[in-house]
Length: 287
Image (cartoon, rainbow, N blue to C red; front, side, top):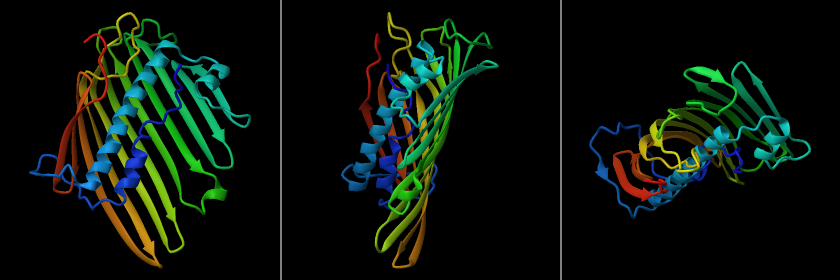
């Protein structure tokens, strides 16, 4: 069983760090005229690698979400097993009330504290049901945060929080449609002897009509999209202070990922430049 404590968007964290040192980008519309960027641009090469990490992590998260449909943890012990690793000071609780499965997990130690709250609902013909068996609809809402332990905030560190809201429709057919949003805020602090960087990254992700088919004989067991689009925007606001001289900067990157039978067609925008490429991410079983 796959652990479900995976934080959506975590694949973007390395991308964020890379972008911090990339050239400035303005907030331009993808409908304008762009100049083709060089595939050999070292900044783009690093960004592309991390976009690919994001694509892989998205497939993993969709697959993990279907695990909830197949095997819903319904007591505290099962929650601990699914959201492992758990330690003696950590807590995990499960409740069901008014049509919602609620899972709350807290993990804390000297290095960090994180919280995960998952709210999950199944429906049949628009009516909430407790048992996923026969459900044609699933909604997953997740709120999470990650806070560095106070003793370690004097060093380079990262704090994060996010919220996810996904709807899985048509689960009683041969093509599930997924729509929703994912918002992530990352606060990054770089600290050295003569330089500090205080940065905030606002990441907005939209999931539009992602289509996923069931696996023959296994049902909803794959997170591989056969169709749909994922868009994301990263707005970076940060201040670099070197020898007590501050330099505030803001820039924006955008990307559009269009799926067809497990292949992602990616367009990345930065300033007046655009890069495009395709990547075979996964196999649609039975296609």
